[in-house]
Amino acid sequence: MAVFDHLWLVSLAVLMLVSQLDFASAGVRVFGLHARDLTGDPAGNKPDPYVKIWCGSTFGGQTEYQRDVANPSWSATFSFPNCRVGQTLKMEVWDKDLIFDDYLGTCTKSLSRGVFNAVCSLNAGTLYYTYNVQ
Image (cartoon, rainbow, N blue to C red; front, top):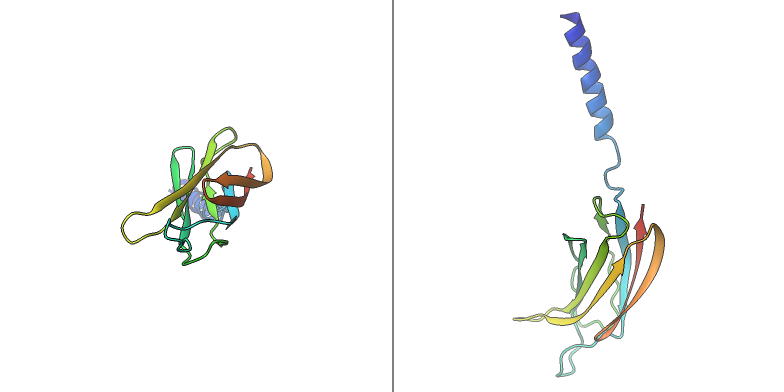
């Protein structure tokens, strides 16, 4: 019986150690998103931009939208623990509207290991971002 108690304690210790590992350190991390010269609707209104992001087929979420800003900067950081070198990072930039959001463009990048600052020309403006592939 003492052997089982000992194994149980070892198992508990291992479980506690594993729970302390940093799972936030992803295979791919995207941060520092900002854009310049985004255009709004044809009526001349400034855009309310936001970004949707994918790595491979995994949707990572989206930034908050910013109201009436042609040069936005987003504080969001996106982590993709299962995305790896060679997969495609995709970001879509949108202008939030009451009924249908307006599409401003898409950026795609085939991922390589390292830290990179990227620039992407959109249909309406430019998107800048940094990504890290571990």
